[in-house]
Figure 1: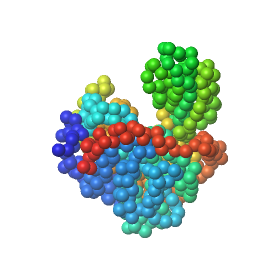
Figure 2: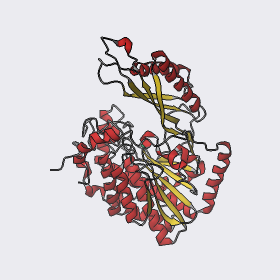
Figure 3: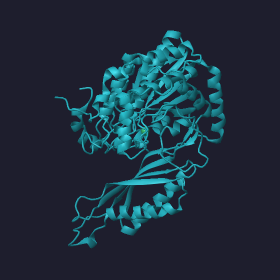
Figure 4: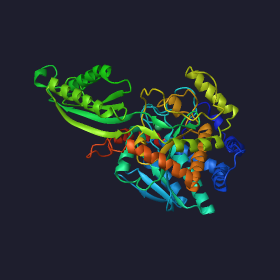
Length: 511
Ligand SMILES: [Zn+2]
């Protein structure tokens, strides 16, 4: 018998409720809608289409594949796009799970960014308002990338239908971008020239609200593994003969924690120890620590050098060698285009917030209660157009930052996550499957498709977006933070997926 992935709220997933078309058709009808835009909205409102993409998203949720191990997830999206006539190039920029799917021809070229990787350690049952791992310690979709990759595919296919039906000129490209949770793929994709000739890019992310924003957001980042090599010895009989690589890691961490006081407050810095010996009675001769170093574009490289000095100091103090400094990823802040964000925002208002059922509000309140948050249920209205913060205080990162400096880009944040659910946490994983997740993905797909239609059919709008970008680029020319010899870390999640995949297979929702 098939294992169940649900918690006790499984009853909210009654498909007939989901397929009531009315729950998806919230378009604000007092605006004039072009026939091309109506075409994408009509396609995405069909109950069979809603169900098709909902099931794809649920399947990717159940695969919960970590960065650069998204073999099943990327294959499912590729298969879906190929079946609709997209030409798909696979295994790009040195990453087997990276792809670009193209439909149409000539200018303008509109890109949409798709993500599909999961996060380690946060396995959780679907739509269950209490912590209940499906498999203890296994990965889970705690950022909704299962919905994002799927929403992008749905949007692109809707645009393809309109291009075909209404003979629209131009090209739509889906950028299948692996390992966003590790901030890896986009600089490598830019370096490989995949964005050459792309006029404008639509990015997206799951959220509790429905909105977009412009200006500089998030932190730039270096993801770096520092490895130390020492000498083994008997820890009791002859420790003086050994040199502990673990000591070097510990001293490095002490140093960086003292460094915090003297970093500008925009920074974030966090680490995990990857390797620290295997038994106390053997002095560890190998140890390594993985850091995420985050700061503004202007401050990042200086911070990176200072942390590197902490590593060198630790090696000197312990008589070990700093044997490798391996940069896994290096990315810029996100610089979102204002004119594009304004255009997206009009389409977000047009699509409107999905109408949630009583069961969905009740699930939201249960989760909010469990988390000690205000029990306000699901949101009722779309959010405001986000402006840059008056004072930037730092925050999370996204590797689409590099793309924003290559082509005008902005991000549609689409709903579905219960307000108050926590990012990279079981409470987020539990929201990203079924019911309200399907509605959020559908709303996101509609807003993306409608925006793409505007970009393909309103040349004067695209011209304004491009002009803003050209002006901005003069002040902010793109230069990758990636060292020239850096390569995508294909190995980084191999062991974890080898351990968990066989246990997870039982719960795949496409079984
Ligand atoms: Zn994310």
